[in-house]
Image (cartoon, rainbow, N blue to C red; front, side):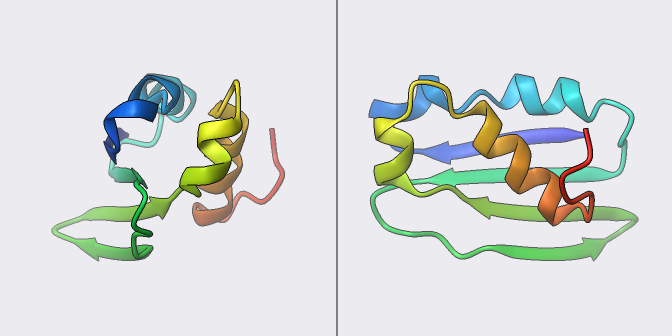
Length: 87
């Protein structure tokens, strides 16, 4: 899995893409982009050239207040991957 982010500078350190990438390291053909900006992003999901691409929009105001965003990121990634609340 490859995870990237497009976030506002003031919350960049909170959006820990390495955590998500390590959690799903056995998912080689998935690419996730986390967006967290003042302007809301558009979520999307598509498959192209054997890769699944997922765009996840994180709520900026909520992320800004949170101390640890990883549980929210993990929950959203699991939901989009169809894993629900599985550990």
